[in-house]
Image (cartoon, rainbow, N blue to C red; front, top):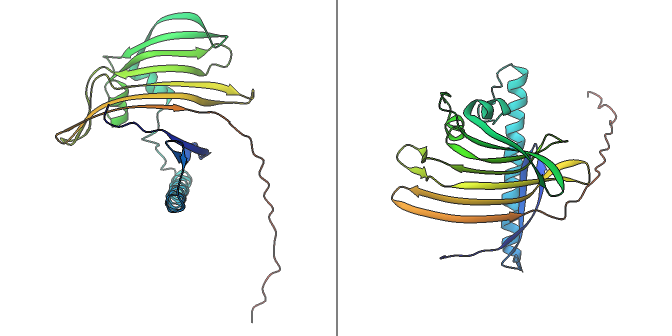
Length: 217
């Protein structure tokens, strides 16, 4: 291991995307300059998401919204084969467990479909909620991310866990990423572990007022 870092974030969801703000590095709070830079980064990210959603709303209104980059259940079901169904106990709950592997009959067209067809692993599904409690997935072959520039190597994978928080909503609790890649002529290996905790619920009130009309001069 050449480098080890521990980072702590606060985060919230906007349009389904996670917006994270770095608050500590290796147990130490950020400096004033680092906090300012992080706030500017988060503000820019929020603005970009707002612009993206505005474009989506416009495309929907015009009937042009294709959602080409969205991963749908149907897409996963076509790209993968689910085999060896069984029942297990996970975190005290009854779960359905399936192994999955690439479907050789599926013909991918988009990049996301090509990525899905190279995945194999195991998925644990809460039997009552019909939601994913845990998933382990890894690439069974190399995945080209850019022509001749980047290559995600075979064996790269992810572990994801979710929990039903406050008996209200499914939210992530754990993620583990193992990445091996080649960018140009350089090899990169990284292992990331993310733990989610201290979820809080906020109530936000919005007050709209209508001002007096302006008289034309």
